[in-house]
Image 1 (cartoon, rainbow, N blue to C red):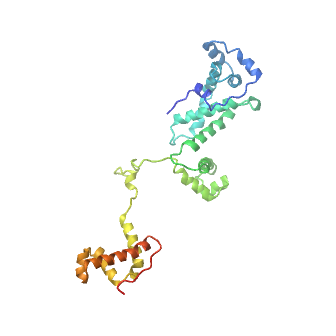
Image 2: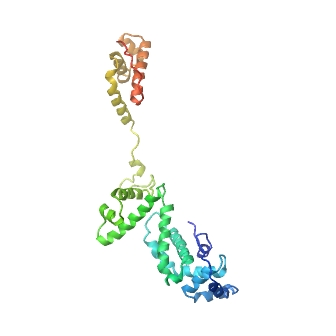
Image 3: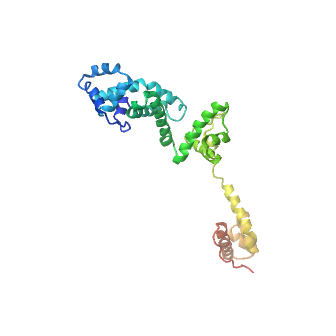
Length: 302
């Protein structure tokens, strides 16, 4: 896990600086030459509006700006934790989600316009949640899922929680369809896609198995008997199309497990004739079993 401090967040590419106003620059200039201890003491008593003006007016790398951002992050750490709580118990560690939440908080600090409202918390909460959702949508999938499906998975998950509280029960497919305004097929696709969000190890023990069976031991494997059965079924489809002598040779070769010489002695023909008739039978059956365009069959022995 990579831990990013609030000061690093303040100067990271994700923190988008707002163009400073002349009044804000003038107000903040008095703090620029002060020692670090005086800066901290002087900032601690400022309200959010003052700290926001400092953070939005001074250039990145400024000690005064970093101090203001750090104080704002410290004041709203509880808000980040509150936003993260609704996304716990998933595959992502809580500490990683807290770091994602701090990125969202820094975006809110840099973009908040006090002229449009006086509550940083009200502006920051949807920004933080949006950053967490974006993290899950873009970076939390162990397999590739198209973006529209990832977005719908999050919408279905959020709608499920909301409808569960509203209805007092788990919502059905029809409830989600009405709430989200999508088709039932889209809801089912999202539910299937959600299963790909958290991958399980094939070596993980299976819950409820007293012998501690691993998941890999319960998965199916290739059964060659099925392939043999399908091959024999295909052979049976064209069996009667073969001459009687070739059918007899095939039975003696593969059912009776006789050699070509033994077959020749039993049928009163040479081993070379047996080989030639087997080749002819194979040449007739092979393209038909493979679904290829069959060659014209020249009747043998007729």
